[in-house]
Length: 101
Image 1 (tube, rainbow, N blue to C red):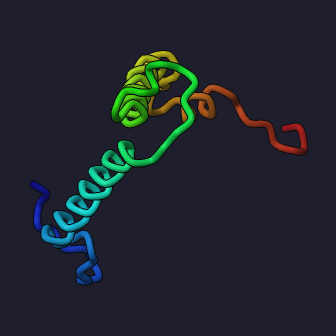
Image 2 (cartoon, rainbow, N blue to C red):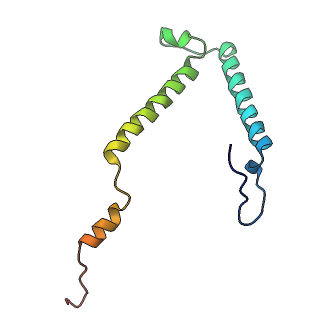
Image 3 (cartoon, rainbow, N blue to C red):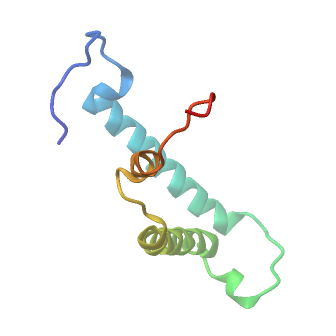
């Protein structure tokens, strides 16, 4: 659980209280359940047989999100730079003054 540090201004914000966080999570869970239930009621035009599966779009969205996260973790290995990447670049180049000295 998060520590009970107060911010420097001493104000208490909405997400500082655990009961507000729980309330927001419950609202999200109810919305997810309602959208999943609506999948059985709403008539959709389908083009492929797998679209008939109940909750297909919820499952598809979840799997796509997981695949994006996994792809991003692999990309991070390639794209990640050292913490002092930019300061190394600046230190390596001697700077010239405008008057040529």
